[in-house]
Image (cartoon, one colour):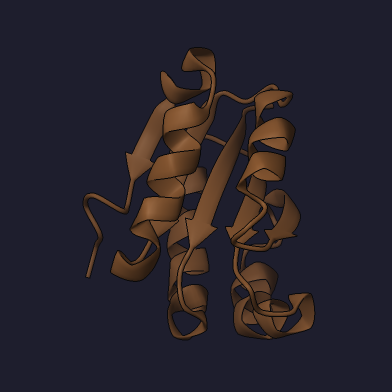
Length: 125
């Protein structure tokens, strides 16, 4: 089973659309499992409120959801570096782009080499 990791950092108003795109990208890459790391200072229940419908609409894809505070990038790196993944998906808005770039640049080369889609550099409208 192909597993991909997703790094997401953006405002709540765009989370549902982003999660729909994330699941679509995971499906098109052949993945059946996504490890989703959301970087946000919002409480977990508020983030889930925004993404619930997208998760329910894509129940065929397994996922693990982690919510990290913006000052916990070191923990994100530790957790991500120990994972066995076959691909990486990046999602961010302009305000949070530097967080994703910082995390991605510090990941091990074996993970960075598997970048499937960078939606921070090429956001779809």
